[in-house]
Length: 273
Ligand code: NAD
Image 1 (cartoon, protein in one colour):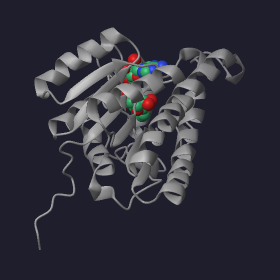
Image 2: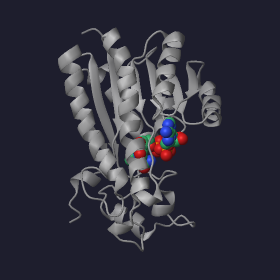
Image 3: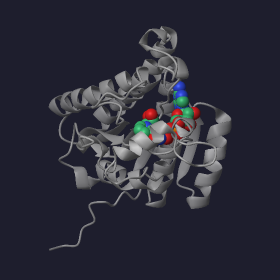
Image 4: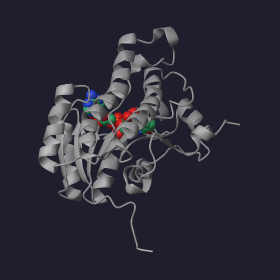
């Protein structure tokens, strides 16, 4: 049998939103290190510049632009710039996301204290912030006849996580959007257009560090609850999402669409008992 590498992503053009972030940014640099040409997108130019400085240490196979994923004009402009620079787009990774205190129930609050304005902002960023870039780049995928989208879901989607309202609602909708878009794309444009999601479990990040760890590095009560409900008995390391992402955006997953892949140390499979 001829030797083939289903994971070969050399020369693939991959656009990553929220690319200055911990998980998405780490994955973007990993994919670049494996031969992909990565387009780093994030909200502010300074963040993009700092990210690109690191990325250029890996290779010259990168560029970056400031782009608000909720700004249609900015997305259309970026699509044009990427096509002008690269001539094609193979993969879109929707990494932009985040939470706000007002969209959660604080430790001394109850459900009635959630601020609906913040709730809406969190829904927008985590749901529309993936839907809008997907729609923008899917036009290119349709023209090319191929393309792959990877969304970021979360463990706050399948099971109720106390306190986290807006973010959980949005991530549950991301699971649904992933399945919906996967079916629509394939039925209309064929089996070279794929849409999947990754659902990371608990990783210490900028969003949740204060919620899960104390200043001395020990776990908060909530952090300990997470560990108790994770069969691996630890938080994930950012590098541990890279393999699943690599698989989903490569030809190794050519018959895979509409899936939400958990990378969670067993959190979503464990009853806690
Ligand atoms: P992060 O918070 O480290 O980074 C998010 C990035 O998104 C930031 O660089 C921010 O500037 C950018 N961003 C925010 N609003 C934006 C906008 N309007 N337009 C463009 N960019 C914007 O997040 P991360 O750890 O890289 O997480 C990636 C994805 O995975 C997110 O959707 C997150 O919700 C999800 N997730 C993270 C974890 C975790 O533990 N880190 C767990 C589950 C899911």
